[in-house]
Every structure is written in structure tokens, then in C-alpha cells.
Image 1 (cartoon, each protein chain N blue to C red):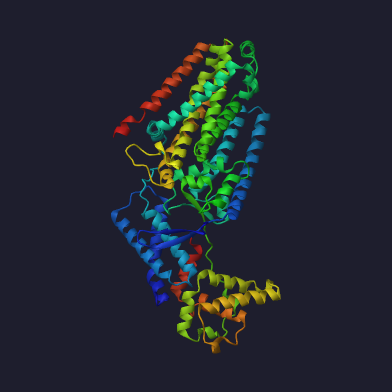
Image 2: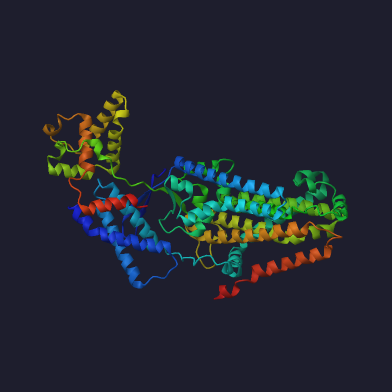
Length: 268
Length: 340
């Protein structure tokens, strides 16, 4: 059974999740790295050819070794210097971490990069890609041997709450205990899904829009039942909008919270 | 449950910031010794952030705060629960005087297996060529070795011009990089439960045995020794060591034999065994890389010169000296540290 997150439990009993990177994002990151390496390789090749033309055997030999070091050492040096990231992984916001949540060790980085020799077989990482798809934690063979996983580093950003028409009367806030229950039981994933639906509502076909918000509203109504007189006049879309407003918008953000939110956006 | 999130944030934020600052310092300079007071403070802050995360997890509608705290606690967890010894930076001196030979000696069974497979391949290749000379093209993939050995020796010995002139460095670097790639591949094939490593070592042995018997049968033993020994006594053991690393990897995967250190119990899971074997695998392949750089240099600058330019006796003596030094190095170096 494939896992979506790497769940770690500390000896103190605290549980935290790191979202695992899927095959698609890893392929994209690898493509960026491959493009960088190809660009660097063609520059080195041109230099080697130029020196061979003028008889610079020693320089041509040196460039051959440099090219090999670049190919082999790129992943190792990048992941060591940038704590588990290459250029491609930085762009795609991925990071290599120890599968037990411990500090990434140099030998783990070296091993997972050297074992690409088998992962890349027979071509285009077919062996490694198959392993990523089939393994529980989306690990290629090099990751399995080195005890590493690749996780996503989510971009932490504030929700665009202007999409939900601020300042309007929200009947779901009328009863404080139900409002509190709604905030507790609706998961972050549900709230973000609903917000994304609101953000993209104008891109939907009218029929699809009605159906989507109908489904979302039914799901959310089942989470916390409200008295009919409070919600009967609300359309499905307005109901979803009101739920998102309750869950994601606090009544009043104090200075301490604003500061923390600003820090959260920068957190790795 | 946190009843007043605003108050909770105002109270906890300074502690989280302090923990972040400490983590940044730890990660920037992991080898620096910290005072007991600093470590106690770090532990307190980690526990406090963990406790905060446990409370925030009950607040399902605070995803940004939860992710921030998860990231913070994950970093602190990695620092505070890392029980493995932190390597004090890479020291080339420690690597050559102790690390590499000791890693080799820790896995002698895997080395014996790798050497045995190579020898078995050599015996097979030699026997096949001795039995049927027509098998040579199938066993030896290099065109310059496919012809008559006596004819090649005649051509090489009467050559007046230096055929490698102006290309020695390129040739040498090509040998180094190609051989290192093959050695890394030999290690990586350990992931096939050692089967791929075994096949590669056996095939290398077949080529070696076939070439050796072909030249000996043609009465060209001095040429063979003078040509192969200077670089071969380093290059061939380097491939066997790469095979050793491949078998160590395989044994950690399967759960047999030599992936543990003497006196240590075999770890129960493959993940734990691989974690234990990882540093030695990297040490072995790094040592192999250095050996192949030397072998590539010798092959381009020495091995390709024959009599009358360079007497075979000198080349053979050079090769024998290298072999003796290599054996002494791998079996003796780092023993004092090992005893200590």
C-alpha cells in the first residue's frame, strides 16, 4: 500500500507528517537537473575540443575527468551543500531526507547518488521509476539502500480569502458553539479544497459548477448539521463560501499571529 | 485544546524563534561542541515545540501553523535523536591510513567471494581458449586483442614512434573514468541481491583468463606480464574490491553474513542492516576510485611501452613492488587504531 506521507512518531509521542514526493514531480526535478548537466557538459565538450585542436592533451584529459566528476558529483555536492536538494529539487520544492527523520548523513547522499547506476537502467530511469511507483514510500532503489526518502516542501502561503466576499453576513457564525465545532472538524485539506473550488469557480462550466458545489455543500453539511432556519436560504455555493470563511478566516488577527504567519511563509 | 489561540501564539512564538535560531546554528556547524547548558535549553525548546504541535494538531483549521510547527519539530527531532557519531569532516589522511584498509578487512568474506568469482571466471576463460582457440572472439570483446599474440608483440616491439604521443593524458583520463564507472556499476549491482555483481566479476575474470592463456600459449609470457602487471596489479584488485562492496550491499539486503561489524549482532531489518553497512560501502568505493586513478595513469604512461624502450624485467619488478605494497597496505594499515 502506497503511503502519501512519511509519518514520524517521536519518543515523546508527538506525531508529524512529511508529504512524500510522487513520481511526476521527481521526473520533472530530474529533467531540470539533466538539462543543467547537459548544458554544463556541452560547454566542457567545446572546451575539450578547442584544446585538442591546439594540441592541449593535458587540458583535454583534465576536461574528461572534470566531465566525469560533474556527472557523478553534481547530485552529491548539491544535496550535501543544500541539505538534500539539487537545482531541480529546489525548483520543484522537493528535499531528500532520512527516512527516520534523522540528520541526512554524507554516506547516504553518496550512496543514493552512486546507485543511480542501477536505477537509470535500462534507460530513462525505468528501474528507479518502477521502484518509485511500486514502493511504499515512493523510493527508488538508491533511496531504499541509503535509507532516504524524497519529500515535498510545501509552500506555506496565506489563503486568498478575498475570494469569499469578506464583510458579508455569515449565518454560520450566528451560533458560537456550532462555529467552533465546524472549525474543529473540517480538516485543512477539506478547507483548502473548498477554497480552491471557490477560486476557480468562474473557470467551470455552469453545470459542472452547480454539481461540484452541490457535492461540496452536502459533504460539509454532513460534517456539522446546522438548524434548518439558519441555512435554508443559502445556495450550495454560498454555503461552501460561508464554511471556508468560518474555517480559514479568524474574526480578528492579533499582531502575534500576523508575525507568526509571516514567518510560516518563509519556513523551509 | 487551545481555548485562546491568540494568547497561545503570543506565549509560544518567542520559544519557537529561539529554537529556530539554535537549529540554524547547529545545522550550519554540526561539528562544533556545544555546552551542556545550550543542549539542555535546546532539549527544553524541542519538547515545548512538540507539545505545541500536539495541541495545534487538534485545531484542524490551522494548516499554516501546523505545517510550520511540523517542520520545526522535524528539524529538532533530527538533531536531538541522531545517535550516530557525527563524522568530523572528511580527513584524507584518516581515510588512507586507517579508514579504507579497515573497511576492507571488516568484510573479508565478501572480498574472498569476489576474488573467488573472478578466479573462477579466469579459469573458465582460460580453459575455454585452451580447449578451442576459435572461442577467443566470443570471449574477448577487444579487437586489438583478438589477433595473434605473437604478431602483436612483434608489431609493438618494432615500433619506433610513440603511438600515444600527444594523447597520453586523454587516454589516461578515459581509462580512469571508464574503469571507475564500471566499478561503481559493480557496486550498484549489489542491489540485485548480488547476482549482477557476480555476473560482472565472472565476466571480467573470463576476459582476463582468456587473454592470459592466449598469450602464454603463444609463448609471450614476458610480454604479457610486462604489459599487464604495472597497472593490472592495482586495477584487477580494484574491481575485486568493487565486487566486495557489491556483495556487502547484497548481504545487507538479504541478511546474510558480512554486513555487520565483528561482535555485533545482525540487525533484524534490511533497512537497519543497510544503515550499518552504508559508511563502509562509500569508503570502499572511494578507495577503489583512487586505485583506478593510479592504474589509469600507469596504464597510459608505462604499460604501453615495451622492449626495447622499457625492459620487461623493470616493468615486472615495478608491478610486483606495487602488488606487495598493496597487500601490505590493505592488511596492515590502521591496525594500531583498530587495537586502540
